[in-house]
Image (cartoon, rainbow, N blue to C red; front, side, top):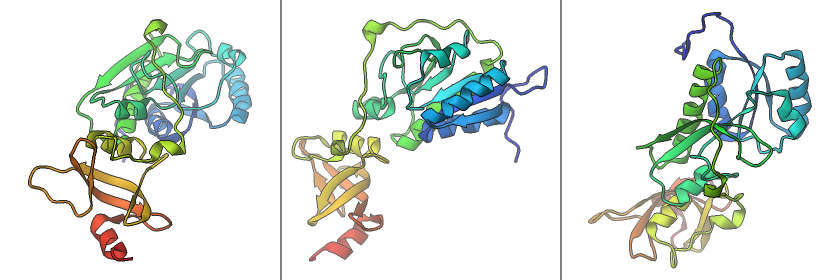
Length: 272
């Protein structure tokens, strides 16, 4: 099935895009851009920047879009794309949550709304002027769904405005907050000191990395899915948290084994 067109271009010529990115944010954004743009190249590594520069010189009209690239881009590369610059899809309401883990940090902080910004890439991390921002409410507390919604919102705006970008607005650096790179030690759950809501958000935020970990029945496990127990509800595999509320562990993966539901885990490991 042919994707529904996002925008009608009077010239009928697809804009040329050089894309830079890695991970789910990049994948979802690229899927939108491919509908309306000619993707000349997708850069994933520092080494790919040489090809990015070559293509920009060969096709001066080409524009660049970046999403979660994870590589510092030097000023001489940025200068090739002036005056519009490299358009960076950043999943936060900048200047909040600058840095490598904005979605995860928002989940962990208890946010119920999630935002995306399209900014002009600058040498300083996520500090460039902003072209567009939007906040989405009523998203499920599910990491992949949040990534997809924000990436698609940013990419659709770029497709619709690429031919006539507005003047970007400078950020207020005084209001900036920063996120940190996730490391393996962050995934350890601590029900003696953490509330049920805090642990649930850890499970969601660390879904792909570093993964939420806790031992059950003397077996180290990755917790994949859980929910806070409702009044009158029973749990096959309960986890009592610091606030007295109980998490129902619904799916988990014992170390070295396949993922399974809680009942299968109990059946397989009780008494061992």
